[in-house]
Image (cartoon, rainbow, N blue to C red; front, side, top):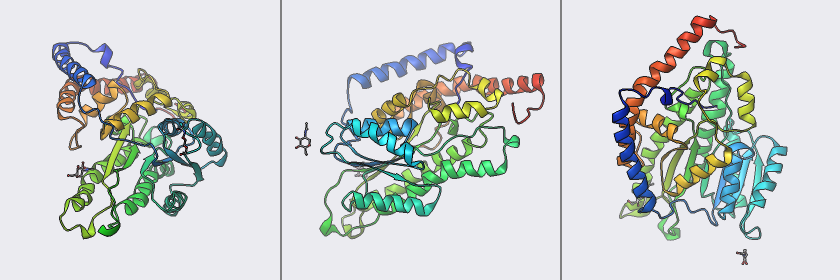
Length: 367
Ligand SMILES: *[C@@H]1O[C@H](CO)[C@@H](O)[C@H](O)[C@H]1NC(C)=O
Ligand SMILES: *[C@@H]1O[C@H](CO)[C@@H](O)[C@H](O)[C@H]1NC(C)=O
């Protein structure tokens, strides 16, 4: 579903020296990280309650299973009851201690505000009156298509299913997490985590994703805004006079996968324009399990904007802008490397699009 950078392997020219220098610094840095510091787990899920929207298939389901393996109580939310029930079995089966961990599913349409409210209330009630500790937004599917060949209604639907499901969910949970409490009942509590699942298309758009990429870019912008806004509440906890402080720190994270093999991906391939398939030809889709594993490991390291493969890292490096960095050394070096690579990648993509038009003429809605 997400693009790759087909021209990277093939355009190894004058920038090669610069790239290899930066790459070797990156490599040494990664090695040092692997051998050493900062290894405390910043995403402890054992005994905590996690809500995963879009948890009945693909990456959401894989993440649910892996968090169950780490001792979490898991609630999955999706539209189709039957898929929820089937996935629940797999998730329950992944539990480390089935007699201690609890599992639940809720069928809901998260494009509707009141449904998101209901989900969070229902989970809170199920969780003995305490709001969930972690909310991971995985809901949403992709309808690729060239912009003018896509009905405007589809463009709006994509915004609803991608941006609004995430924004509605975030609104419903943050209202609860960020409500001030009186100091008397204030116990120290571990941080809450809100996780968005975005796409590398938010960094580097590709022709044929006009219905989808803008919604993902909006999600990334929401994430950056919230990561700053959350500091207000975090600050309230550091105040001497804590009469209006929030009960726990809140951490925002956003994940940027590329192609993920799933039933959704297969449907997407069927309607995807030929030029889009060509532009992303070198994208090697990852399995949901792999994407979930890499994401959870990055969450455990406390990362904010998370990519799941090296090409994704480069795309992020090219578009990091004002986003908070995971590591200023690695992100700055990747940014330098990306600015060299993208000198060739973007013109390469445009040239391929041009050549496609020269050969095939104006695309019809079936190409
Ligand atoms: C599983 O949880 C139960 C209830 O908390 C506990 O008594 C039991 O020792 C746990 N089993 C394992 C294998 O950890
Ligand atoms: C909030 O502030 C505390 C204390 O300054 C800090 O330890 C914590 O990491 C901050 N949390 C976030 C989400 O930035």
